[in-house]
Length: 345
Ligand code: DOR
Ligand code: ZN
Image (cartoon, rainbow, N blue to C red; front, side):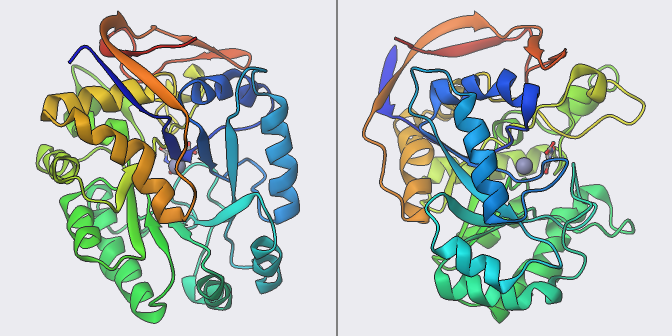
């Protein structure tokens, strides 16, 4: 197959940042995707509908003129989120979900949830209103090995939460393990998961290939090969509750190449092309469209997109670096060959 057409995809997990960083990255996503579920972990987190609306406007103001990209906004859950805010959200057009970060789990998560029980009234209201909870699925207990944090999250947090709130819609974000894949697969219809390109393409050896590779560090951290294979098996099976979410998370080169480098991988430059390569290797290119353009919209109860994109089979080299705010960013797989190319008008 030398080219494929598919419904324009959506990115259901995207970090766009703000100010000059936002201005540098947003066109990459808009070129490929119709919609993006925008993560709220700014330096000053998006904790209210009013803040989300203002942030949405800043995103729209930074879009290229020739795009219809729609930012789907989310709220950042804290111990202090008010039930009243959920009522406002439910009446609002542009905010679609609430994001759970365990306090201290990752970039800008200091204001995250310290004790999930404190949020129960809010979760109750979300469950009643059908508002999805998007979960960063890791525990932050430093006694738990970093490679086990997702698995322990399932036992300690997710399974009990789902018992307590049977009808709450949950997206287990950026899953990385066979444990998460199996749990979601066996779970009810109100549980879904996103999968990133990096967790499909690399295993944890990529973080230490001939030295330490800060540009391959993200959270949840890359896992063993058997876990990567489990994620590939999910795509191979074409299960309808797993869908595209890049977790593209830009950080400047200096912030990554540091004694304490930030977590986050920038995949937005060519995300759909990376996913196409994964599906091609599986021999399941025809299933890319369901994963990238159908299943996520269906889970969120959104209309599927009507526009189409075309991907052509063509080798090209991913740039060594891209401009980013006052600095530069090193994209995922910089300098390596990508085998698919999005046709742009
Ligand atoms: O690697 C990550 N980077 N994981 C996250 O959960 C957050 C993200 C970011 O915002 O940089
Ligand atoms: Zn994220």
